Amino acid sequence: MKIGLPTTLFQKDTVENAIKKILKLHPDCIEIVFDIPHFPPDKRRKTEFKKIRKVLVDNGVECSVHSCFYELNLGSFYPQNRKFALNQAKKCIEFASLVEAKLVTIHPGYFPIRHDKKLWEEARKRFFEDLKQCLNFACKMGVTVSLENIQSKYFFFYRLEDGLDLVKLVDGLKITFDVGHAYICECEAKTRFPEKRIAKIVSGKLGKYISHVHLHDNFGVKDNHLVPGDGKINFKPIIDALKRINFSGQIIVEAWNPKKPVNFGFRSLKITKKLLNL
Ligand SMILES: [Mn+2]
Image (tube, rainbow, N blue to C red; front, side, top):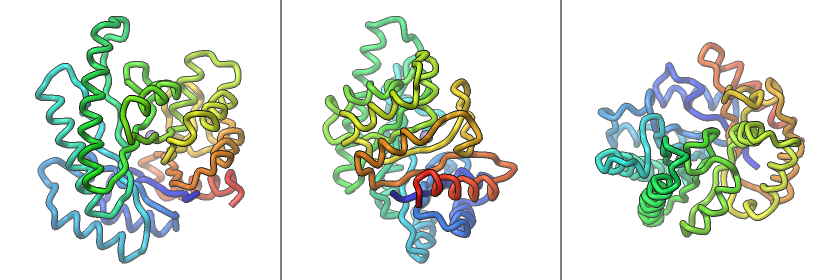
C-alpha cells in the first residue's frame, strides 16, 4: 500500500508549488485534484500540464487524479449540464493520461428528489450512460475510472452496497473507497458497529473492485476530513480488511485544514503509517 496526500492540502499555492510542498513531506504518491482553485476552467493549457508532468517525473513520484466535482453532476436532468459535466470529466481523463496517472477518481451524479422512485431511476439511468461514456474514453487513454462513495443519500453511490450494483452495470468500473464517507453513511443508518460492517463489505464482494482509498476521520455526522485519530473512527478493522484483500493501491489521506497544511500533511502521513504498521 502506498500512502499519499492530495494537492488540495495547499489550496493557496499554485498546483506546481502544492506538489513541491507535498514532496517535502515524503509521501509515496500524490493525488492531483483537477478542480478549482488549482485548475480554473479558463487556464487549462497543455503547456501548463506539461510543467506539472515534469515536476512529477523529475521527482519520480506516482500520482492519481481526482476529477472535478464541486459544481458538476453526471446524469443531470438538464442536457446542457450533463454535456458540460461529461466534457469536464473527459478533460480530466486526458490530463491524467498526460501526467501518466493510471487512475481517475470520479464522484457519482446526484438527484435531489430521492422519494420519487420513477424520477430517481430515470436520473440513475442517465448517470450510468454518462459513466459508460467516461469509461469508453478512459479505456482509449489507458486510464482506470474509479467511482467514489459519497456521504449524502442524494448521490447514486451512497452506501457501499450501491457499489456492487454499479460495478455489475458498468463494465470495467472500479471503486474509490472513501472511509470517512462510508462511516457517516453507517452512522446515519444507525448501524451498531459501523467499522465492523464496513470491514465486512470491503473484505467481501466489493473487495476486488476497490482500486483506490481515501482516508480521513470524523464523528459520524459531518464530513469533517480530519486527520485519522482526531475523530471517532476505529480504523483497525477497516485496515485489516484492506490487508485481507491484499489492497496494493494508493491510500490518499484527505485531511484538510487550510490554516495548517504542513502540520496536517505531516501528521496524516505519520499516523497512517503507524495504522498500517509500516
Ligand atoms: Mn474522498
